Amino acid sequence: MMAMLSGKQQNVELDPAGSLVDADMGAFYTWLNQQRLPGSQQSSFLVWFEGHQEALAISPALPRGTQSESPVDIKTLLGQIT
Image (cartoon, rainbow, N blue to C red; front, side, top):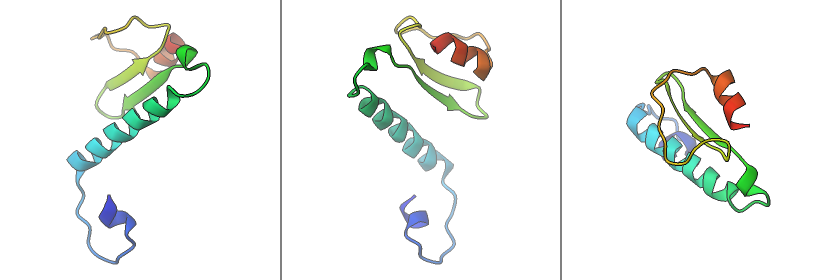
């Protein structure tokens, strides 16, 4: 990521695994910052791993510490967390 943002004209190799780590950390820090806001106990958080059929949803409307193997589309998932 740093090589891409530096602005230097060079051939930058793609790093999907590194990008996934960057996205994971970005989502985690976004969630941490969300927890500092007033009303955070009523807020929902959704991360959708596009193209891999995985998502993480945190919401007062969902049970804690559970995992679902049932397929669901994004519209249904958004309806469940709001």
